[in-house]
Length: 146
Image 1 (cartoon, rainbow, N blue to C red):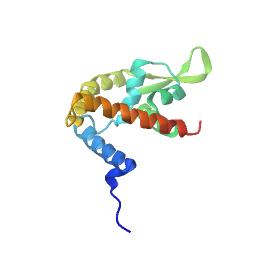
Image 2 (cartoon, rainbow, N blue to C red):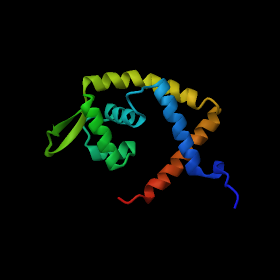
Image 3 (cartoon, helix red, strand yellow):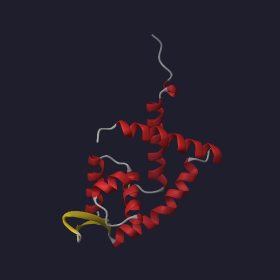
């Protein structure tokens, strides 16, 4: 049996894409703050005072990953859990001043990194790539049990 061409395996190619992204993220954006952590900071800038479940849905991270990301950001003093004034049984998340400052600093870095990361593609190809990735990941997420 001959070896298969892994360039035809979406999972292998997705892993290579993730490795390239992680390398560029670390070099151009932050060695301390990961891309998922930035996604959480960004979501809380857009909609503060949401609970962890809602945050998980917005950034499309599973429950265990979001719990870990939130815990790490809280330990770093970038977000805090606050008792919901409308429902004392639940906590909501909000960025601290340091979290807001970090987000502000990373926004321009992420934009620059994305431009470099996607530079081999023209504008139409970039749009197509992002649209197709979204379509595949959305379909895969629908298969996940609730």
